[in-house]
Amino acid sequence: MRGAMRGSAGPGPPPPPQLLHLLHLLHLLQLLLLLLVRGAAAQYSSDLCNWKGSGLTHESHKKDVEQVYLRCSEGSIEWMYPTGALIVNLLPNTLSSSNKHLTVCIKPFKDSTGANIYLEKTGELKLLIRDGESSPKKVSCFGFEQGGLFVEATPQLDISRKITRFQYELIDKRTASDLHTVSAPCRPCSDTEVLLAVCTSDFVVRGSIRDVTNDPEQQESVIYVHVSKLYRQKSKIFQPLPGGGGWQGPIKTPLECGVKPGDGDFLFTGRSRFGEPRLGCAPRFKDFQRMYRDAEDKGLNPCEIGSV
Image (cartoon, rainbow, N blue to C red):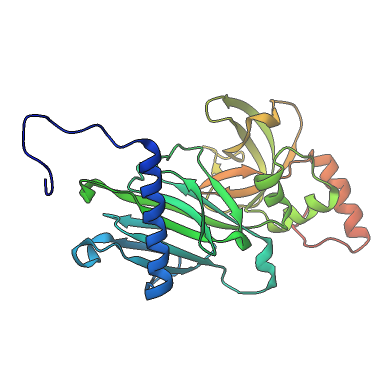
């Protein structure tokens, strides 16, 4: 090892944690100063939703800072052999004042390793996801106006086995189903929120609860739903039953909501988050019929979904 003394004394004691922390802060400061003084290389994604890159593009593994620009509501980042840092600019398809209502959520893939992910604004960094912290439950969200993503490679003796991979989604906090999946998942919906959820959700179905399983470790419940009427769905969340007779599929919700099997039909609405259906508003179907017809009589329905 360059600069090491040869002899029989062996390696010295490891540096104290305070010194390691200080060195890491100095390294982050160096990267940020590099961005401000020299600018950063920009890399554009061909499909505007996903980006794949490699740290091996750096000359002699220079500690470069690269800019990545994406203009999509959801996608993924895959950074092989991470060295230096990435600044990931997530932009909605249309820039407007409504951006202040956006929430950004990121979720690392199970095998993601090799970098820390920070929230960065005007040179200040807040750690969101630590290197290797990739449990299925780990999702970090922040307001669009709070800053951008700064992904810093951690020092590695062997980068050949390291790939940093995570998904992202931009969520509009103003929609009813998003209010439940992001900020208040167990709060009962008002009539207005239910009617708006019918228009904006990724799935809208009439059905009954067949079973509920609880996962205390992940702090989630899975609701197994038998669907008698399918108004709308994305990504084939609900699959046809063999021989007909409706559809079936699972919906996830926080364990704290205390969902239990019960009789009767419900209107289930919600969003698909990172490929998983998440429950939004779910009134009893007879209550939904009442509020829908009342709004229809007054001409206040935000959208129509057919016969109810």
